[in-house]
Image 1 (cartoon, helix red, strand yellow):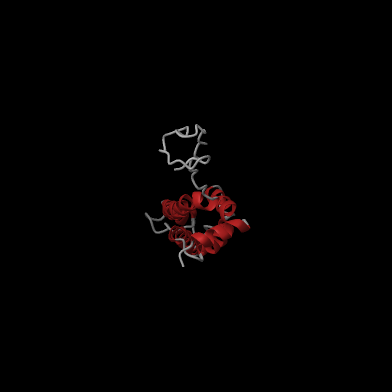
Image 2 (tube, helix red, strand yellow):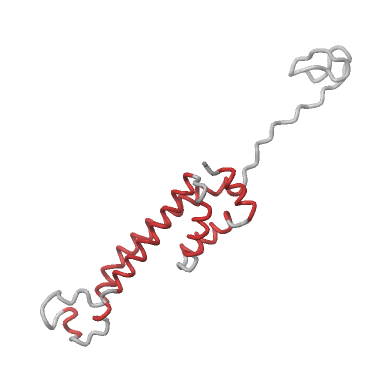
Length: 172
């Protein structure tokens, strides 16, 4: 470090030049580089998508036996006059035993999409932002947790500057 007035060599701790007495202006402190919204929120958001996928599957696995029972899937339990046999042959949902399978397939596909979204964002795949936005729009109507996660994802990734930030972070 040198004095700006006389050019005298100075030590970093000196506040006044020993030769000319000129005060040394303080050195500006190094400011941390501000991180962008995408950088701050990408990892938590990716983790939330994976957790939501697991949560979605667990919730359906817990609800499935009850739903199937309501649809008449437990009709062979017990003997006539017990359980669902008490409802007789006219039980209204006996013809809809395909519905639990359709819902199960939908839940599995939705959970797989959410998990793929989370892993793509964690890996910073170039196509991960697009997949996350599409998944967020598809999950927007899933009440409470899906809606909140979708709004959070769209808030972070949808604005145009977010696309540029994500492209800079993406691994090609």
